[in-house]
Image 1 (cartoon, rainbow, N blue to C red):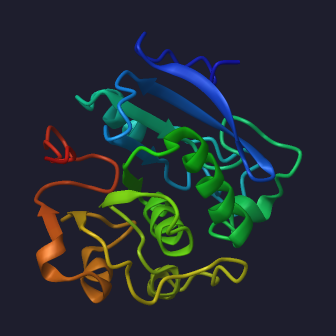
Image 2 (spheres, rainbow, N blue to C red):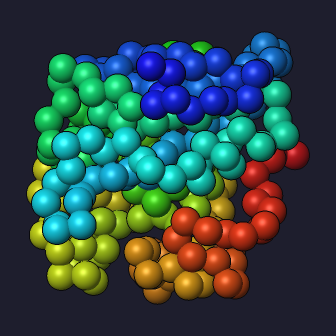
Length: 233
């Protein structure tokens, strides 16, 4: 199925893409093939990782469409929405670690980098990571300097998972990579003032104040009609 019955705008094409050991779901709009034209790559959050009772879900496909909608309403020539491993497509390589304690594992991060490299080729990339996708995008930048990332944007993003799990008293993500400092790259971190999933103070602990934009009235998955400034000059 085409991503669980989801109907993308006609200019977007559903493309299952190799991501290391995984196959991931992507929706792509590539209009400008000029090698200098940037590609805006949106990386999904952790999705439906846990059931209400706190046990791991059997399918981490996100139930909300916040990131897909944001990607598909971005007024740029080249836009890609990229799901995380095991969302929409349950690869044979998938185990529950991939959306629980290993959601930011080397295999996941390097797999996502593999997919981004294939799609971007020589294009500059603007990486936009939502929630746990912020962590994935930052780790891709840190581990894969061969990808020409021009700018890094996070939205309601986890930037250090050790402080995040400790804040809530949750189990640490023992199979995951972490960031103790952020990549040295042009970056903007959009924070929801009312975010109870990724509280704003966690972003302030690691990101420079000049790189943070606090959106008043916003919650973790609802930024109202706020207009993100995602497009590079």
